[in-house]
Length: 120
Image (cartoon, rainbow, N blue to C red; front, side):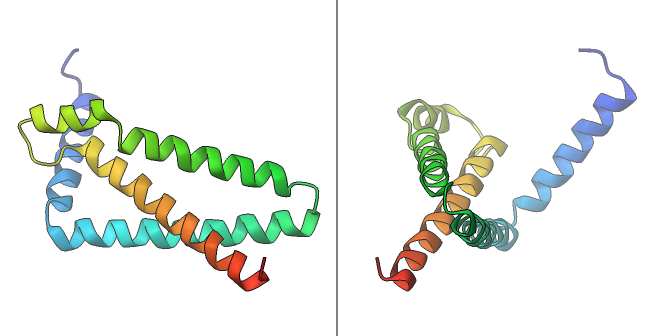
């Protein structure tokens, strides 16, 4: 690939973001924010789909499918082998996987709380 201004800008911004995320408290804050965002999205999903009444099964299926795809991608054997072989301790793909897993955690936790609230 050629070394254009755009690719240089993308590379430098990616390095700056990665350097910012290397600090543990910033890493942890991003994970907490994604879990809270998942909690909020589950509240939106259950609130809007419960109002319609006909979309409950479809929403539950889509949420279940999302959770299973994220679990499969995070806990797959190929990703764990790649993590062992990589030189850096936490590349960007692992950070994105942890953020998705944290989002899924907030989503499923809120769905459990909604089920207890409704008493079903």
